[in-house]
Length: 68
Image (cartoon, rainbow, N blue to C red; front, top):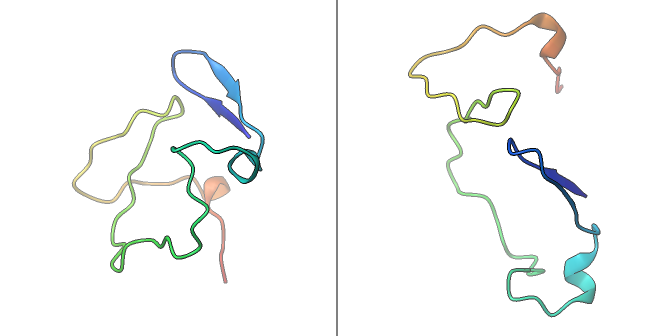
């Protein structure tokens, strides 16, 4: 897994890092869940900065993924 930020730094973390390390930042607990009411999406710019909005934003058709 590659993690990149707006600052230009790119870091690599093996996808199975938490399975082979005793790192306190890792959690392999299968009971970890998302919240019960996920009702919002935080839109980010191409650089990863959160865009603060109070309404819907227009989206180019080419960027929409149909999830049926």
